[in-house]
Length: 152
Image (cartoon, rainbow, N blue to C red; front, top):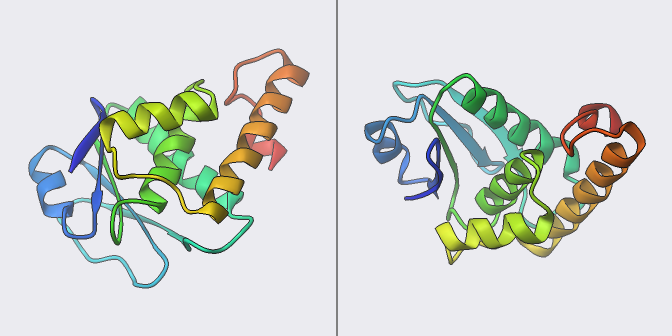
């Protein structure tokens, strides 16, 4: 388990109990291959597939849910099966919603969890999310995350 930020933990499917012990009040399960396990805290399920293209909408939904929880003062644990690809994609998307570029967010995430890197299909989705964030920011004159939901 690794800390992306003070309020965001990253891990694999074996780490939710440790995330809860570390104070996670919400778990975000990104596994498409299984239904979420029940824990003592709420679990938000956003089923992502490593090899599938065009998953921008669900990546952004997960990142937005994390952003809402963090803004409400909650600590969030994000996990997928191995804690490498899908966890990385959603962590990067969250950082992009917070204003980081794709390159900055990737470097930030890799400094926290060096083994993490999105699979190619998820990477392409992140590139598309960045294009849309930049476009929404330029057209509205606001920050990256403003109007993002509407652009998808």
